[in-house]
Image (cartoon, rainbow, N blue to C red; front, side, top):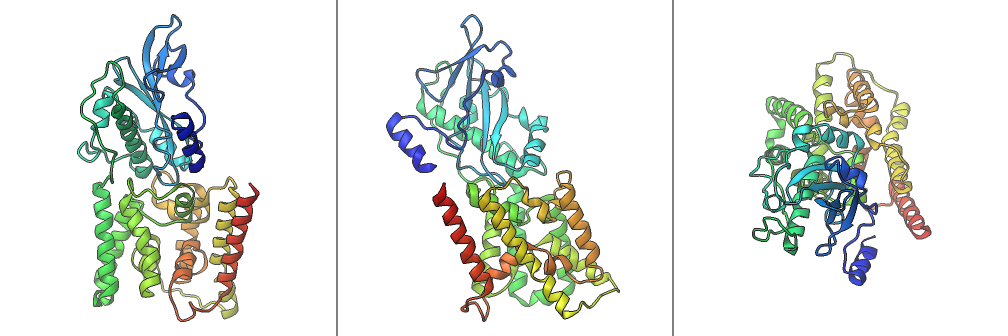
Length: 406
């Protein structure tokens, strides 16, 4: 896809988007400019469309963030956003077009009027100079990554348009550089929790029970319920398909990198044992329970295969691109208050009830993300070929065959 876009750019001199091939339609613009009748491409700038009324009078401008933001990933994928302006290049409204993002997060952003109108009445030049951190843009609660991706996409698109210095009748101002990493207060909080977890896991502090309980409450309350920074298969598959959002979610990217790298380098399960809010909640509940069942060893071994089978199913869904929300296989969306689906809430409830009688029941018998982290963890048998290795080879071969068949 990227190669095809590069060829079109070289031959036609115009960037195109194969992710978002659908052009802007006049009906989309009419929502903000009711008198809009047709759209014509601006002669001086091919990325801009002039909005004309029935009499052919110029009444505004329209643009979209694709292809500028095709590499800008939210929680699961990029977003194409419509940008409508008046004749003075002053924003009158934005709208989300096609997205590869999780539908629930998109809906949450669209329904937040404060966010959707935040950019209104700014000129294109003002938008290009906008510093999201200084403007205290924290995004939409519960859908922060999605909303911040939209916000940065608008800024980057405005910067690209301004750098051409061809917009007639606008406040041009100085050229702006491409937006860099956006670090917000929530990112600093997540990084602090990550650093504290690393210190606890690598020192004698891990044996301090009071400190561990207090830290687990922080994981559940802050990292889980407030930030919603939990690893999941939906997250990892989304990044594998669309790229890593290191600009809009740097803390979550670092947390993910640490979760994958530390088990390989040190044999320690940093994320599962010291960072997972759901694991922390299970441990706290299990400690207070007086009813612990001892499963038959054969039954326990059978159940322990379930996370690996779920992980294989996730890979199968990912490579075949079946229309299925992977969040339905894990309980982690339950921590995104107001956004969680019935499947995630049900899994969370069942897992928490189960841990009353079976310690860490979900972690041991139901978590595909945990299975992935256990698979990459360095151990004494890492240099031997296992069934997991054979399954991984089969899945990779399947991916290659499907790619070649397209």
